[in-house]
Length: 344
Image 1 (cartoon, rainbow, N blue to C red):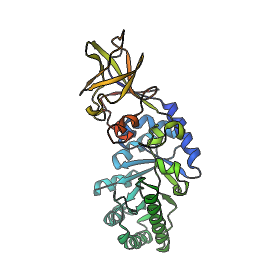
Image 2 (cartoon, helix red, strand yellow):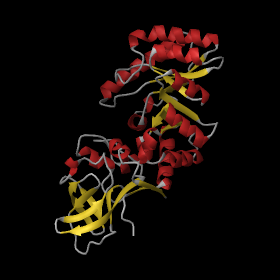
Image 3 (cartoon, rainbow, N blue to C red):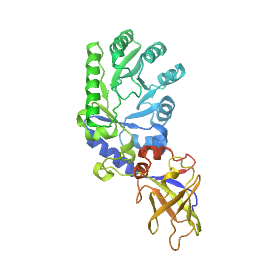
Image 4 (cartoon, rainbow, N blue to C red):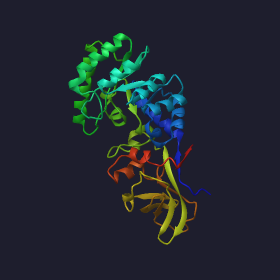
């Protein structure tokens, strides 16, 4: 009898999502974003299956994650890391043959200095208004001239130009896309020949084909996580791949106590506001605790019965997130690593 929480991850559903993304974004390529342990789903298993399904680009966020992807996917994978804050991280990225995101001019000079006879692949980031890092528009011309000098010296090759969208409104995204196009043209005028333009993440890659460029960075949709306030999974053609299962550990007069584990992503404010799935249908979540929670009771509840907090047959991670004004990814990545993952 299982009396500890589990996160069940359906890798076949994940593969189906990858196929759906590939069809939707073609001819752009799909970069699978695997930050935060593949959004809490288990990086090794996710990367291994993605490689089998034909994914060749991985978005690692940081160098440490890039190293993990390289270990699993091997030397042929293209791995993009857009955070490298120290010389040691830059050296590690170069040793691992990562593509390096460069969002500030000083980092550009550091990468060129540390290339040490190699030819570092860099992707220059233009800040199109989100201010999540990126070279400011007023600094862009100087930065691309400097990049052209480093490229001429053989230290770097500017492989790509990229940015983030706010995805807050069509007008804001239109303005960001226009700024991005201007930055790409300026880079070409400066003598650079970037092969790859990437601007769109999950939502924009599906809804705005004109933003897809050569590569789209899709994480959430690959894991079946829909956008808060947006279309449902069925409308997007994606499937939830993870189910958080909390077994019944005690049946008490106040309700059924279930083991949820350490769930930093399940705020106590959800108590009384959402339902969970039980063997007899939906029941109200009464209380959220540090390791255990209480659910509205049902007749003949037994220790070991499975309660699905979110996932297949229950609310989605985004459904829970919307009750606390956040996004589904935040729920997913905060499931404690102490909660056992089971890959199906």
